[in-house]
Length: 183
Image (cartoon, rainbow, N blue to C red):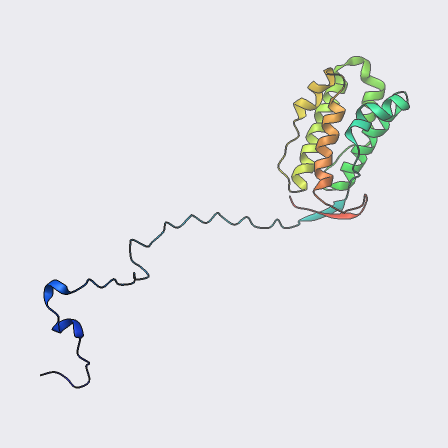
């Protein structure tokens, strides 16, 4: 007997050879529809400021390398070297960075050739440390900072390009304004 609440199925009364297969919608978890899930990249946590320092000044590397030293008959070279050390000392006060010493090494001991190379090497390390403190990957090579001194003095160009990366880390920050340090 048939139940009165269940409607009759018209396909039951049709002969077997005339029945059409009924397509069903795929189930949400059907294997044929599943797509491989791309791995989710790990979230990089936003760096947390651990200290603060004063922003450095952005300088034109070509003016530092050739323009201003030619105009000032080489005096700007010593002024620039003093200024970058002073700015790096103010940028990260947690580190002891000499300000006048490196400039005096170049001024008074340049005849030894070795002393300026050591000073350039140490300046490259200080620039690399400033990049790390700004939360940037350390791209400044201390060795390249002195090796390029033998190639038309392009170490000035290289060091200023690397310092400008630190300055660019803080867009819109005027020189000598407070900026966060991350490492």
